[in-house]
Amino acid sequence: MWRLRLLVTLTLAGTALLTLPLPSQQARRNRSVEIAAIPQAQAPTSTLPPQIPPSTSTEEAPGLTVVLDPAHGGADYGARGPTGIAESDVVLDFARTARIALEAQRLRVLLTREGNQDPSFDSRSAMINGLRNAVFVSLHVSSSGPVGTARAYYYVFPSDLTTANPAALAANAPGQTSPPPTSAPPITARTSLIEWDHAQRSSVDSSRKLATLAQTELLRRFKGSPGTPIAAPVRQLRTIAAPAIAIELSSIDVTDAKRLDQMTQPLAEAIGRAVAEFHYPLNTPAAPSSGGR
Ligand SMILES: [Zn+2]
Image (cartoon, rainbow, N blue to C red; front, side, top):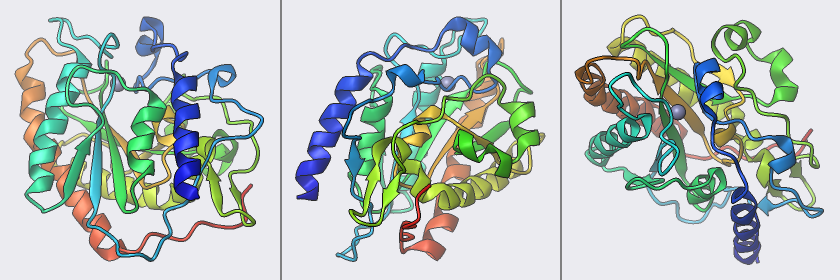
């Protein structure tokens, strides 16, 4: 029954995302992370909000799957460097290298795109929401910031901003907040279903933990990076019902592409180490709270 409902959910969500706009040039200039905000009016809407079942099954659990998300793609190049280098190409290279490192750890790895496609936010989320034991890592390159540094992000719902780190939000994520979802509470004890648009609600704590581990590993490899991850309403992460983070490297604004190439392997190692440290102490997915807000 859940399987059928999930299929219906994914179909609804995928259809809705066909209307989503691409990030504008202006938005990219104003963001340290140009992860597109989605206008609330264009978010998946329905009188029956899409829902997905939480991954709480005690059935035989497969090994951990890491879903790597090279952001952007297709006509959405993301940020552009002075030499014409496109963020969408750079992050695809990052993801391919990270896949090799993760597979060497005997982890299953999926990429949200294998080439120059541009899956919708929800299509990317759907890849992991159908899995029972997985984490999601979205990869970006900023258009500004100190070259050679990296930041990890975890999702914070706009309604929870007062409990997040307001200083970090103000300093690092101006203009990139997405409107809060306005649909019904995310989790209902009666049905044990998690609403699509609030999917990350069930994984906020684990995502923060993964982001913290990732930031620690990034700092070890990229001096000048912050010591703690950043809480921000990164649109892609909101609809993921699993531990999910975004990593953003600085920056696309380099005249020598080798500066970014040199970050590829250390980034892969940082992701591999963080995922390993996250996974082995936490093999059992946390049960979702029944007291949704
Ligand atoms: Zn980006």
